[in-house]
Length: 285
Length: 296
Image 1 (spheres, rainbow over the protein chains, first blue to last red):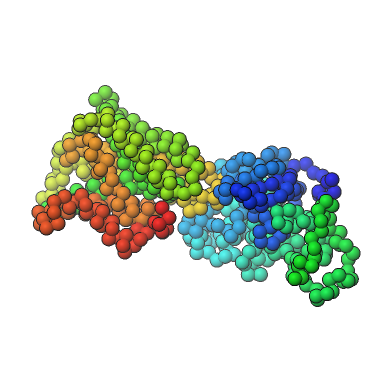
Image 2 (spheres, each protein chain N blue to C red):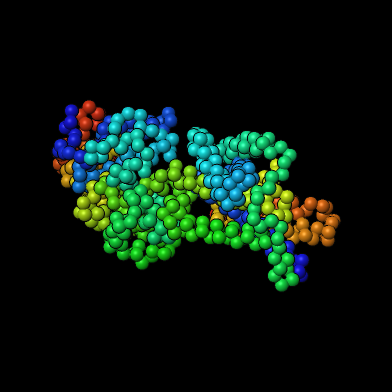
């Protein structure tokens, strides 16, 4: 029953029924999602929902955490990504900005960018990419010879994104890019993501900050304990009761939840029909 | 004063050779987090190939083949053993390298027997006089060669794509992989370079005034361990500083051992390890080390 999928498309990212285990621990229980070419899609969820695991499954870094894809496939533009090592994923145009930035702190800003270009050959392409990154983040050009560890949090995030862009990806995977940043800086990062997307790069955005994510993305998935609990176009999801309550921090007065007037049902957000609706009462407890 | 200067030059020369060995040790540790206890046996293997080949091919070609052989052997150890060992802890791999060391060294000493092999170097026992200071020519060559190789390596480490990949991997392997850096290649090249440097060091450990390559040469190589450790296992600068400290300490302690008779004979051989202990007490991560050596 493919009622949950976005409009049919060719290419793009297709995650199909992916099951991920870390040893005996099952982290993803059959997750499917799509990122159409040129779009921004977001995945929301609380801590431990499996968001980062999902990105690891796409970028091929599960093996660093003693995990593996037990079932399902990941494809990008028709090419299979599941089962190939991380550098091969980069070579196919999919680059991840890791959670917590993870810049190479003891290397200079310039060398960080060079490291980002290593996966995509070098020479002219790298020089062009560097120019793009510098125009996107002028501060990285100013601080080219400074050690990356000395940058502020926001600048480190810019470096992490710039470093990933050096590989000239067609799909950028972002893991909580606004985590721990001041609101103003977070807004700047969000604006940059919009611009990167406008330049033709598809984006899969993992976020806990639902307001930012929903404003950027066109389609959203909500992960819960390793499963897609909810999905839909962001215009509809943003209005939906459940997302508002869970992720936007909009709380109703206790007791008001059941009889609350407002958009009927989910406000248009669709959920997999086979799965039971999570009990709302949990979220008020 | 003349004695002191002579000892100092000799010490610096030996120190630069130790630095070559220690540098290889550090490169491997940075790239793969493995403490390579097989390093002395790689050195012995390189030296052995030079010793056996030079009567047939001449010294320079033999040296080239010996260096290539040691690099290849190191790469093979990485490719066949280190890469395939699916163990959770790097200390287990360190113990594996002890096994590798025993296998290679045993085979080489069996081949050598009690022979002392000449490496056929063109410098022989000629000396040069600078002012009143008399130094063996080959010691100057050793100092120059080691300095040139180390400079070359540090420049490559700093400016080439290979160097960037090495440093990125050393700092954060998973993120390096996310950037498309092939960790297997980084690790393989680190081992190969380290092996090649060890073979060059083997040459200078076996020339005048030492009699030549014998089963004891790997003991001389072991003095590079304190050099790497006291400099900080993950620091290339530390390897250089450590090598020079060990070389100079050893030369001075040996040279003045008559005045230091109360310490017993052979203090020169022990001194590097004493210095290492003192430095580790003061700075547990070594002089230039950033990580806790406990992580080893």
